[in-house]
Amino acid sequence: MASGTTHQRAVIFHGYGATPADHWFGWLAEQLRADGIPTAVPVLSHPSEPDAERWEDEVRTALGAPDEHSIVIAHSLGCLTVLRYLRSLLGPWRLGVLVLVSGFVDRLPALPDLDAYVADGCDVTGLSDHIGRVVVIRSDDDPFVPPALTDRLADLLGAPVRVVPKAGHFLASDGITELPAAREAIAF
Image 1 (tube, helix red, strand yellow):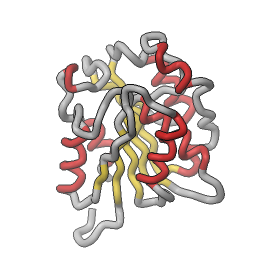
Image 2: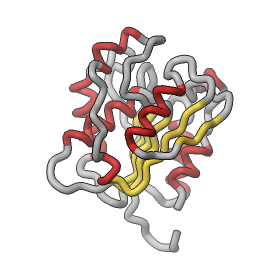
Image 3: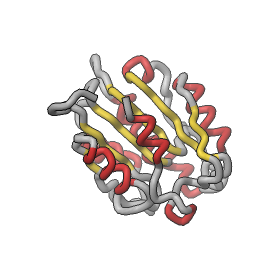
């Protein structure tokens, strides 16, 4: 990146049962800020009892109108929420980079409590046309989001999949408090 002021900005969205202080979110925010990229990690309310409409409104508030300098990183249920927000955008829009960690658009057998939230998922057809780069990151042993569901999302988006071996669901309890793969996905 050339020296000087960047116009880039990043937003990191957590998932179900998490807060901005959990897992690798703070680490990644610090890394991006050190690179001169202003980064927000907003709270999605009631993370253990997520409400789809409220979370989408909170993504809208935090992200606003994306542009080619916007970077969005989302984890798990945050991925579905971000995709639904992007789907709702009208008129021409661009997003620079979208990184989806353990993303999915299908119901999760291990988390039937989220069936109502997931419902029919999200039609992602054409979203990639508005995004400069989409990267999907998954583990090979995720106990909550089957790798096949993350691969299906990547296929629907026409995005590459980066596999981080033995990372579980990318939780601190899985030993994941840093996620270099996400930072590398953002780096130009």
